[in-house]
Length: 198
Image (cartoon, rainbow, N blue to C red; front, side, top):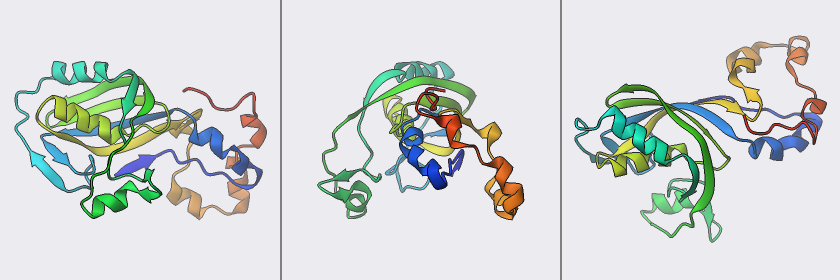
């Protein structure tokens, strides 16, 4: 259910992995009102179904506005975050719930692209480590109707934008000569010109 920009590093470019991992990200996605899941996305098990008919566009916009700026976000149980050396998702599979420490994130933009209940299209620009699905679940909880993330597309990672990306299917068909012109040189992302906020 997740698509979009995936930065591939080769050769000396692998030294820049921290630059891209630490870059701000931009997403476009769809939130589904009325259904909550244990993973906060469409891949999880449904934990609740509630009526969403009274939820208005203004209600959702107000919550999106509240979720911009600095936020303390608790990692979801179904995630790769480790507690005492064990990934949370492994504990979740056993039905365990453990304490998770909230982490500071920053949301630069959380805007609505479409309101067609139960679906809400949105654009989000945020710092690394932001769980987009958890933001959707939080909105659903606040609106008392439940919600989960039903689709997600990363449109930018730092300065790498989806408009400059090559579809994986096309990439796999290219030979070496056709592939070389598509590789971006390391100096384009030097220490002083590395990707920053989009």
